[in-house]
Image (tube, helix red, strand yellow):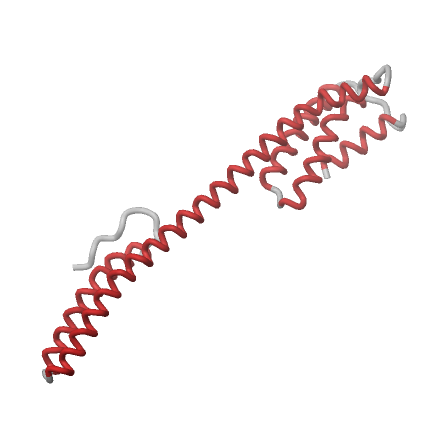
Amino acid sequence: MAAAVSLAVTLAHLIGATQPALGADALGMAESVALMVLAGLVLRYAPTRQAAPAALAAGLAAATWLLRVFTPASPLEGLGVCTFWGLGALLAAVVGGYLRFLDVRQDRAVADARTALRLQLARDLHDFVAHDISEMLAHAQAGMVAGDPRQALERVDAAGQRASGPCRCWIAPWTCCTTIGPSPPPAT
């Protein structure tokens, strides 16, 4: 919206509908800097589909404001002046785009790290649980073959207790992370 208004005012000056007022050069310079900052911020934070057209409009408005207070001798001189002044908008856009790229890269790195940790946790849990389940099955089958079901159940229970201990220790930090700060003291 700001870029459209700025371009409309510049166009009005070019067709002679308005004349520059006293101090228009200083205000135009401040407006141009604000539009350059806007171009950088739009490229960094706006949704992708809206970022490019909005930044392009802001950059164009920042580059052409000089035509309100400066009458070029030739079209080539006007193009050169606008191009030179547009380098600031281009720099702001490059910085905004680069910061957006860094944000995206950081988000991907965090997602990849979380996935790697989840996979490692799943592998570790599988290794421990699979070993203990195999032990429980062996005790149960031995109890069925040997004919002492009470002793087999006690062994299966002991193996289950051993299996659940490490699982609780590994899962507890992942499930009780809802608050930031030190952990509450254990209940006594």
